[in-house]
Image (cartoon, rainbow, N blue to C red; front, side, top):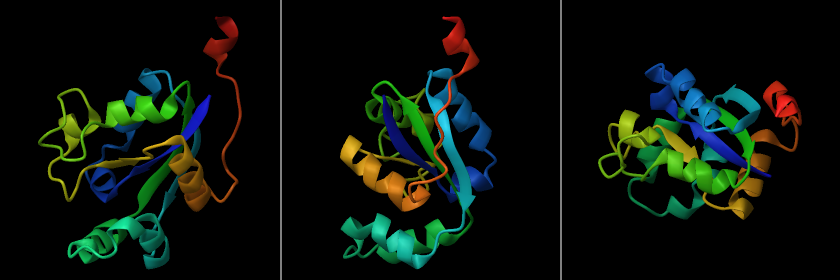
Length: 147
């Protein structure tokens, strides 16, 4: 089983789409093992987006990610990283397929609803960044006991 990080970005929170996104993940069979709302500061944004720090649009990313709280989630399942990336869709919502989260809910590349770790290694780093090694839980779903 893999665990991966998902961030529901400010536009998701502002548009009241948190529940719909979580439903899609759970309907796919993924297990939500960590969940928290948090207000990001420059330090965590700079660390998370360090690969974009030299880009001219980086200040707008900082501003956007601090606009409202985000929802950080740890999601577990078989091949969770790949599964979540497929559900998420292309980074640019105008290129994301219908049925994907960004394809159905994303409006612009600047407000593209969701972040999902791109590899198992990145997921470990990002989970530590946003959860600090705590508040991620192991449990068995009732349906798993029945099957």
